[in-house]
Picture 1 (cartoon, rainbow, N blue to C red):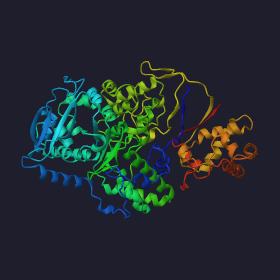
Picture 2: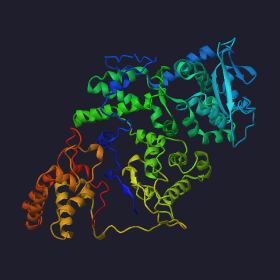
Picture 3: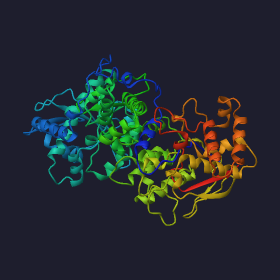
Picture 4: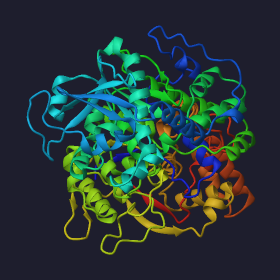
Length: 635
């Protein structure tokens, strides 16, 4: 087939502490400079270009952490106090101006605001070429509230041509706005209108003050104001442009409505294990991390900045630096979590995790890096692992999002072609990937899904989990794509790599049984089918059965034949001697068991991997987590 994969071990379906710690310790440092501490990463995150925030040395009092719902209610109360009593905002749209009461903001932006012509080319808009609406602060203040904004409406092509200092906002919808969207225009939506008012009164001024000196006049794109949610055709057309809008914008604000600025500052301050963990948990448990669409927005944006619940923007704009402050801080948080796992005992970390669980984020940083680099061999499996751990209202949308990562065409073209049901959308996308030589749809771990009649090979059509794909990235694509997709069948023309002589059915004991007894059994199976004493073939076979991913390997953990020979003088002679002695010893004898341990010792199977977690060695890490079939392939 000509396809090479980075082989990681197959994880258990049930989440547990070991899986979590393996995940964090095995996460790649996609932003580079992995040795930098989170304190260094956070130093200088401030409102000014001089970067002068000094992390607090006090411990975080997590008991006083304000829940999002309380904060949200307080914000609405404050905004209602400011925007009630018929107060209005001045909205300039082209040469027209209008005073819009705060209570009418929702109906104005979602229904009434006219999008007559493009301010750049003066051309008309259509469903296929919808208006892309942005707002900026107006120099003419409102006589009522003192707030005035300018609306800019362009074709997307004209937006790219004008290249304004565009700031997009990636956020989770407030419940009041979601409810208003579902109920439609026939009802009163005072609470939702206040959410729009907050964008105008808080977010736009914060972005303008922060970036105008370095970027010029700021234009804000926020879906509360920029997408007319009650104009269905226009709304759907704009949603298809989302990835391109975020990729075009100068920067993106990651709105963390349940993360206070102090949490980020205290992460940089360090502290004892419990303090560090609670700060990290507060950050990683933010609602923003749980949603799928915002993850897609982040993956496509050029630069990201955290916008906290205190209306603070963390970081400063520097066009000469590739890394953005949010990604830099996020990677530092991953590193700090990995260090906590490595530097504490299993029981300590397990107790902390049970008190405040931290969600699995999947290949969060890796996906963003791959999208930005426009990596052409991104796979179905990698895209599934990314969207699996995130929530969305419509299951079909998962395949729309996955399609946007897979570079099969423009996002709008792909989204229009995807079938309307989740099952058909999964089949459509999987077949599309197979046709271009991406065979990962056939290599996913299956969950308890109902098989699709006529397409039993399809996985992911009813449920997803990040561990369904843990084989890593494709390191080289197929040289020739030889696959038949006629009818409901998949036909592959594969290259022969060896003859499978016998299947050994495991009855569940391999995963849960004694690791040394399992290794003894595997060694005996390998040597039964091996022609003579071939130490190189023996090591190669064990490499396939007990793989370990690169991130958890230490500098003294060999795995290939060449590595063993380089690190261990006389390795070949020692291994051959042990193999001969093992073959002479009676089956299931104490002598053979002892020789099995000697072989494992020479191969360093019992050494701890990457850190202080002594429950992880190559022997335990590389177990077959499926617990179904162990086989030996000759070749």
